[in-house]
Length: 207
Image (cartoon, rainbow, N blue to C red; front, side, top):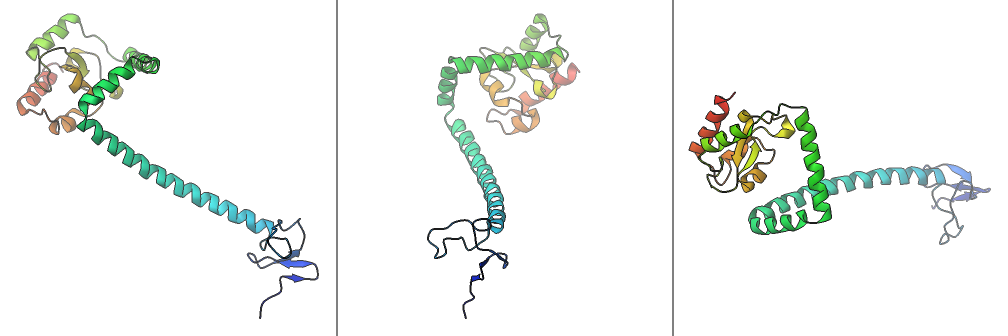
């Protein structure tokens, strides 16, 4: 037998199973109901909304993390397979106002970190370092324009001194970035055991 939902001006809540006055103080309006009142009381509706909101929040956060990991993985794969396009896009972006601003901000952060670390590399020492590596990139062996790469990254408290600055072409410098040398270089496409040993000997010699 179906249970009555209204008795003596009281309405039964189908969620908490309690009887409450059948008016809008305890039940929200619902036009498609015969009594124009929601079958659940306001308190139960509030608790349900809080539970579902938290569940949706957790579900959304999980989807965001999974999506972010997929996008990051896809972007890294695409960049690795389209190095020429990446260079063109990067150069174009560097010429924009936003690109110039970001580059300036990055340089300011680097300068700020340098002030708190040893920074005693001289021009003579830099030329000696280039000569040590035969005027070539220490990582890939190519000659041409050489940049100063921190063997121990600046972000990891690497000092600006002869024992920590390695000559590197722009490509190798960008690819190494803040990675650990041993881990990165072992898997690098231009890996050379002889070049690796030479770099380590150089670092060890000036410790």
